[in-house]
Length: 188
Image (cartoon, rainbow, N blue to C red; front, side, top):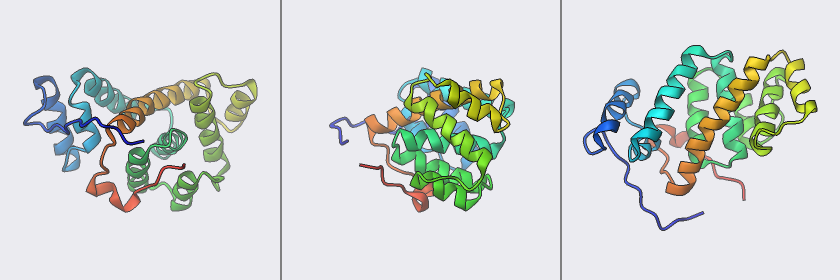
């Protein structure tokens, strides 16, 4: 979807005052402020909600770093987000997600790991069904070794992907150079 909107990608120098410290922190942490965060910088409450929430999740997750990336990629795949698929494929590689798992997530095929496949299916069900998962979805997820708390974390991750995926649709976020090797073309 192309839009006629032209959102400015903010930096720590030209963003609203309430966004500047986060954009500076992102640049310090990653060596650059990702375009997505620069777009969020136009609305400080959105940027703060995402940045603080994601950092808190990373420190207090019941899912492993690999499982979190599988969840982020699964929701982004279902939401057909070009930017987040590229970004989380790159982050997944940095997090040591096996490449065959990343490839399956990017292609929409079965993950060659039963537990990660169960996680992906549950995230996809939560995303597509807007949280109205079936008893079968729940039992398949729990049977794979996940917990009720993991179910709540999936909702958190899907919520973060609503923020990011929807912004990327609206703004047609350019994929950063750091993620270009994993550029992804949305399904038609």
